[in-house]
Amino acid sequence: MEISERAKNISPSLTLAITAKAKAMKAQGLDVVSFGAGEPDFNTPDYIIEAAKYALDKGMTKYTPVPGTVELRRAIADKLERDIGVKYAPEQIVVSTGGKQTLRNACEAIINPGDEVLLPAPYWLTYPELIRMSGGKVVVMETTDKSHLKITPEQLENAITPKTKALIFTNPSNPTGMVYTPEEIAALAKVVEAHGIYVISDEIYEKLVYGVPFSSMASFGNMKDLTIICSGMSKTYSMTGWRVGYSAAPLNVAKAMSSIQSHTTSNTNSIAQYASYVALTDDRGEEFLKNMVKVFDARRRLIVSLVRSAPLLSCVEPMGAFYVMVNVSGTFGKKCDGEVINNSSDFCAKLLEKSLVAAVDGAAFGAPEYVRLSYACSEDDIKKGLERVAAFTASLE
Ligand SMILES: Cc1ncc(COP(=O)(O)O)c(C=O)c1O
Image (cartoon, protein in one colour):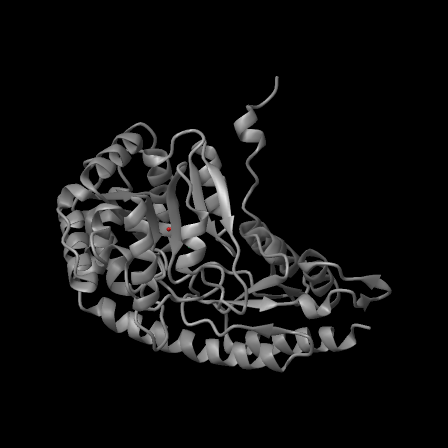
């Protein structure tokens, strides 16, 4: 018997695959430096772990309301008002099993078969699959180093058709690390409002910005009525394994997302929900974040300077998240051991094979001139890995 057409068209997550491959090589004893990580290399803060233990001891082990406990949804609404100045009722918040489920719920709630969904490239590789799973059509909007890997209002205006349902907007961006300025977002919001399309605003890296402000799409004009904020605990509190994401959306969309979730996973893990409530309401969160941002910023500066001093490579300076998008097109046409490097896939394969450095192929993000390096690793690994990368590009003929 055959699997469904829908399932046949879904590709597995390449970023997870690269990390798994690098881990397997390390397990064989090879000294691989991996720049594939998609999660902070920090432990979840102790006060959050203690909260989870408390939840267990107090018997918080039963079903909760599908969209999350009222106390957690209230804490999220308070946080949003504090951080971005937008008021939400707890009924507009849906807590899900990770940011991924949040995004999946959002797509299912608004996309009809044949709807076009705009996706700036380089994009996080899960989005096209989510759009397609919901029956939508992916419309890619290309960006370049010259445009700082950001879309412009003119580009957005030109991409919108009567079939456009939504824009997926990731700020700060995975994979590029770019952060849109408030002025840039205001200009995009104007176009969105004029056409009345939705914005799925992925803000999961909101707290990881380095000397620049974060602004939410929902804060501009009447954008609250058109924006579905998708975020979560994974990156901010280094809670990737806990699987807690959340959305803030117009009431009808929030209700639809909750209904969809009620027939798929029901509520998010009750213990993780309580721990998330404490994470968001205890002052120790700020302290933890301040330190994490400082450490990431130092690594960011280091990796950018090392990439820029490596032969044939360049990058636009990332100001958020923990990734740098390296333009490797300068190596195309060069030979490694007699074999020509034609694209980012060739580059990554040769780099891993020859220099034991794992990078993520930009082709996965709709950007075949780039590779993504994550700096969620130690400064020692950054130095060792980039030394190897520079030696590799210098050896190309
Ligand atoms: C841009 C972006 N959105 C959403 C997610 C999903 O996060 P979670 O692990 O909470 O599902 C990720 C995780 O890598 C991400 O990079």
